[in-house]
Amino acid sequence: MNGLVILEEAKLEWQNSVIWYEEQSSGLGLRFAEVIEKKIELITESPELFPKRKSNLREAVVNIFPFSIIFEFHQKRSLVTIVSVFHNKRNLKEKFKRVRK
Image (cartoon, one colour):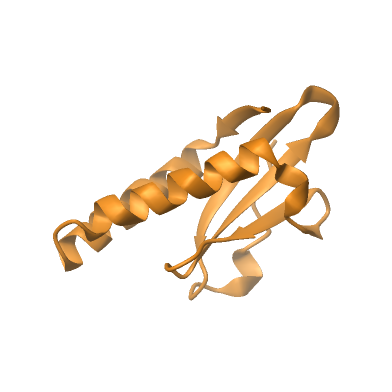
């Protein structure tokens, strides 16, 4: 298994989405959180399953919810960095703009 870093911006996107879904329907926020957690586990175990989209950024499309997890995989360091939990109805031009500094 690879190491995992989740950037603060990605954590905030995830937390805000959990809150929003929970406000829509009790339990839906928890379901969203679980789906994201499972996808992050898969990314961490097998990051190369997901296609490179721009530079070193890869995209894992989330099932059920309209989100993608944007991440970098640093093979030499065995490290996955989650850079965004991106809502796919947002401006798609922004999807791959956040790069880890």
